Image (tube, rainbow, N blue to C red; front, side, top):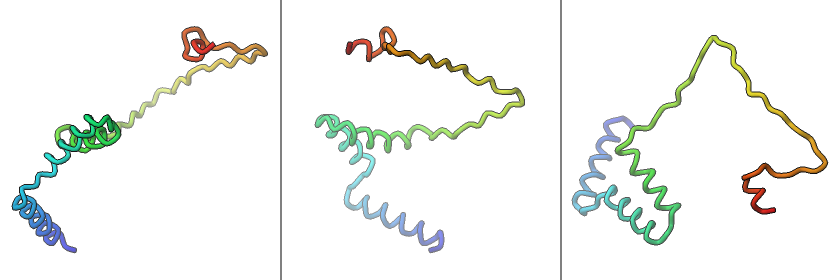
Amino acid sequence: MAAGGIVKKTVAVQEQMEQLGFDPIESMIEICNQAMSDKNYVLAGQMAKELAQYIYPKRKAVEHITDEPAEWPKITINITDDPKPLPNSPAAKIL
């Protein structure tokens, strides 16, 4: 389908929604509010995510390129016969 056909369909849908008094943004806000009241945070989050793209621009990935050599982190692995969780870790609270 040519671009003109897509534009015509979009305009037709917009006109039909206008005639019916239907506002999809308003509906998403209502769904989000109802979902929050129902403690359906998954649905509320989905609606908020959809709505956010209308007011906040999507950020693009940024690639960092440098000629400097990368310094890899040093990792130490200790092997023991008597393992214990780290102090103040969630696992330490269980014991």
